[in-house]
Each structure stands twice: as structure tokens, then as C-alpha cells.
Amino acid sequence: MTAHRMHSIRGPARLRRTGVVALAVLMFLAACAGADGSASPSAQEAAASAGVDAARPDASNAPSIAAPLRMLPGAGAVAFDPSQPRVAWAAGEEIRMLDLAQDAESRHPVGAWVTDVGFAPDGALWVIAGDAQLWRDGAVACRADVELDRLLGIDAQGAVAAGYTHADGTGMLRRQIWLDASCNVSSEQTDPVPAGVSDAEADPGAPLRRPSLRAPRMSVPADGAAAPTDWPKGARPIAVSADGRWWVIEDAAGRALWTRQSRP
Image 1 (cartoon, rainbow, N blue to C red):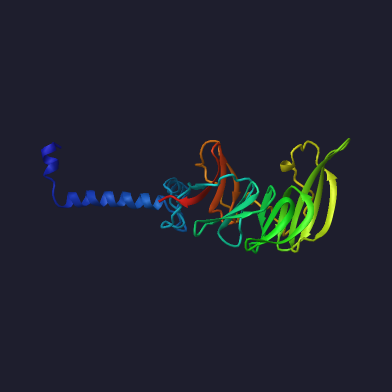
Image 2: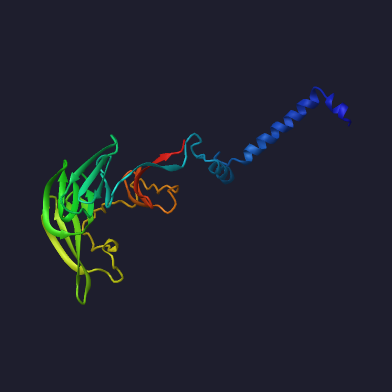
């Protein structure tokens, strides 16, 4: 058949060719569907590679990205408030607090070097500055006259904190105390730190006893969200809010506040 004759085909022949193409399309679609009408594994994989939820074609599965907001000058220990969008950090002999909704920063002199901070579930702030203090509404509500270095756990009933000393022939000792919500010492125990631990920050502490006690800096957000992967090179997460939205990271420039956002 010459090229001229192919161009001159009309009517039934063209219909037959159209029918063959339609049949091929239908066969392809059938191959991509299971007996129950769901997408086959190969179709699901293709959808996943395109960033589409095969079960919900209209869902957005856009990955999250990190966006820097501001540096936290002089930041030592950092903690997020589980009751409202706030972050607090130790800065020498004062506490600095940032309202994340209003972008308003406040400063609270402590009068001693602050080594640790952590929020109670109701938004009260535990502060370790030589002793243990509980702050409410920008003022000290109570304090425990016990020499301490760090917080180990906080819940609605109080906090667990530890102080460290050295003893000849024994090495580093941990004095762990349990405080109630009025800063009273309810119990304490003193133990050598585990073998191989030479830094108080690396000490896991003794068992906290109450399952409601949580570390002052969450390592995993409540929604299970992982840290974004596009931090500056060499950066490491320091603290994360309960919903996984806000992060404090540390790199060569210091500690900074970042937020996790969806890609547009």
C-alpha cells in the first residue's frame, strides 16, 4: 500500500482503527486494576513516585521543609511550652522567653547562672540555677534549697532533678531528687553514675518512677514527625515542640529557632 493510498482511506477502515486503539486502552486499564478495582502494586508504586497518595488521589503528600526564623542569642538549655506556643531558653543569669504566636520576647533575670529549664504541662517553668525554682507568670512561685545541675523529668505532679559531685575512690556521684509542685523534696537517692559516663549531660539518671514524667526536651514530637533533612550542614536538633512544628537546632553559628512547613 502506497503512502498516497493510506491517506485516501475513509469510512469503515478508519472506524476499525479507532476501535483497535480504544480496545488497547481498555486492556491497559484493566491490567492496572485488581479484581476489587484497586490499583495494582505497580500502579501504586508509580503514584508514590509521583508524590500522590494512591488511596486518596487528591491528598497532598508534599514533604516538609525547614525554615529559619531567628537566632536565639546566648541560648543554653532550651524548652518548648506544651500548653501554648512558647519557647524558653537559658541565657547566662536570665531566662528569655519567646511567644511564638506574637513574636514577642521577654527577659527574666534570675540572679544566678541558669543551667536548665523545662515546662510543666500547665505552662509553669522549672528553672535550675544552683537550686530548683518554679516560675509562674514571670515570677518565682517556689524554690527548693537543694544544689542541682539539670532536670531529668517533669509532669503535673512535680519534677525530677539531679546534682553531681565527685567522691575520692568512687568518682562521679549523682544525687537525684523528686520535687512536688510546691518545690518540696518528696524523696531522693544518691548513686555513682554508670560506668563509662564522665559527663553529667550524658547521664541517663535513675528510673523516674512515674510513667507521666517526661524529659524537658522532647526528642520525638507527639505526631511522630521526623526532623526535616534540609538543615544546614552539620546542624543537630536540640529541642522540638510537642506538635513537631517548631525546632531549635545548633550549628556553627549557634542555636536558632526553625519551623517545619509544607512545600508549596
